[in-house]
Length: 264
Ligand code: PEP
Image (tube, rainbow, N blue to C red; front, side, top):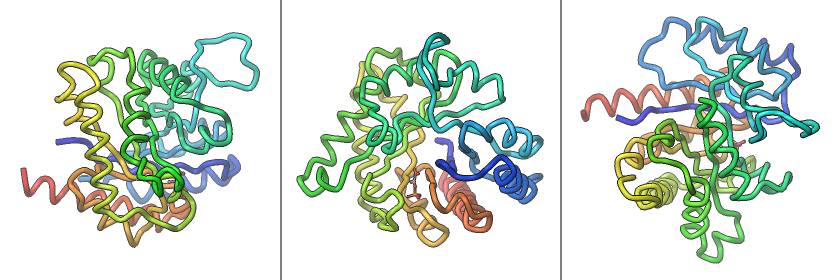
C-alpha cells in the first residue's frame, strides 16, 4: 500500500512566531492520534527550526520549499541539503511551479536537485503540472510526462525509492479552480505510467511512488479527491495556513487510509 501524504506548503507566509503558533496547534491536535496520513509542514526557510521544534513528539514531519543542489560554496542566498538536514528537516519540495515560473527553475535544475536530495537522504516531493495554455492546447499529458521523465533522468532505480511526486496543474494553484477529481486521477495515472517506463524494471517503483494532487485543495473538495485510486494525498497551499481547514484535509487522508485498509 502506498503512503498517503498531506503536505502543507505555507509559501512565503508566517513569521517565526506565527509559524510556531500554527505548527504547535496542529501538533497538539494530532498528538496521540492513530491512523493518520503522513503530515508534512513546509514553512519558509526562516521558520524551519521553529517548526521542527514546535512539532516535536507529534506525528508531523517538516519539509523545505526549495534547496540548492550544491553541497556548499559560493552560491549567495542558497541553502544546501545538509543545512536542511541539520535543522531536522526530512522533506523538500522540488520544482514547485512558482519556482519554475518565477525563479527560472527548469527540468534540468529539478533533476539536479532531485539527485542532491536523494543523495543526502531528504525525501523529495517533485512537482509537475501544465499551464492553462498547455491544457487548452491538449498538451497536458505530454508536459507532465516530459517533466516527470526529465526529473528522473540518470538516477538509479534503487536511489529513487523515497520519491514522492505532486501533480499540480498550474492553473489550479491559488486560483480556487480545482481540477476535477476524475481528471486529476487520469493525469496522475499518466505520471505513474511515465515512471514505470522511465527505465527497465521501474514498474514496482511506479506502483510504490506516492503521487499527490495539489491545486486549490480545501476541506470541502479533499474527501472526493482522496477517494480517487491514483491520488495518494494532497499538496495544500492556502488551506494549509488555517488550522481547522488543514485538519479537515488530514481527516480526509485518514478516511482514505480506512478505505484502503478495508479493501486490502
Ligand atoms: C501549492 O502551493 O502547491 C498549492 C497547491 O497552492 P493552493 O492550494 O493554494 O492552490
